[in-house]
Amino acid sequence: MSTWNGVAEAYRRSFATLCAGMIPELLGATAPGRRHLDVGCGTGALALAAAREGRRVLAVDPDADMVAMTREAIRAAGQDIAVQVAGAPLLPVPDASVGAITANFVVNHVEDPRATVRDLARVAAPGARVAMTIWPGTPAPHLSAYGEAARAAGAVDVPGTRLHEDLDFPRSVQGLAGIAAEAGLVVDRADVLRWTWRIAADDLMAGIAGGVATPGRIHRAQTETVRAEIEGRARELWSTYADDAEGSRLAFPVSAVLVVASRP
Image (cartoon, rainbow, N blue to C red; front, side, top):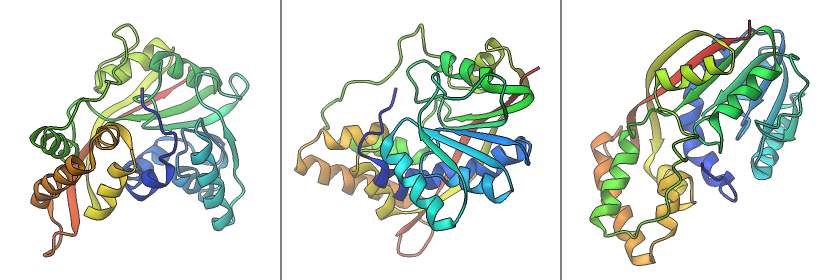
């Protein structure tokens, strides 16, 4: 599983902009005008987008820094959204009480994916849709380039975060759809979606240097000299995806698994 302790601001500057690419799909897959539960709200971008559609939103995240960031974004936007420190599979929501649920890149980060999806199914009202995304098993170009740079720089290994095989699932359309079905949901849609992620090279590097996800864990474990070498090599590899003449902006082709399921 992944941990997000102490990396909220680094995430906001970097990988949050990547995750936001799925917000229109998630909202389009769930019904507006009903009580909406956003699980793993992160920076609050999805919750705010849902509220702007007129939805009554409860946003939850197990990381207190993420919740604080969401609350600040809500205050600045002048929206009325309930926010709590909480997460699946211990959602503070009654059974069958929610009309729409989103979990944007949540199931791939938790200790027990099946228990998490069962809890999403538990709180879904009859007919409610649960829209979930995960990253596929094959790393996207920005990650594979960082990994190549780290290996070339002789980076020391860090302990893996892979789940035990009894808890893990295939990071694929079939894998996510399968655990949705196991939870008693009816799968309405299961796709791989592709888009282009545009980000400043400095912002991407700030996210990694700030400790976000596996590259961040690797980066923080190195000496200052090795970190500098990794960064130089990574930036050179990323320059293949330059979106401007200076190479300061990058455009990566990325993909995600989307599964939309409903409670019978």
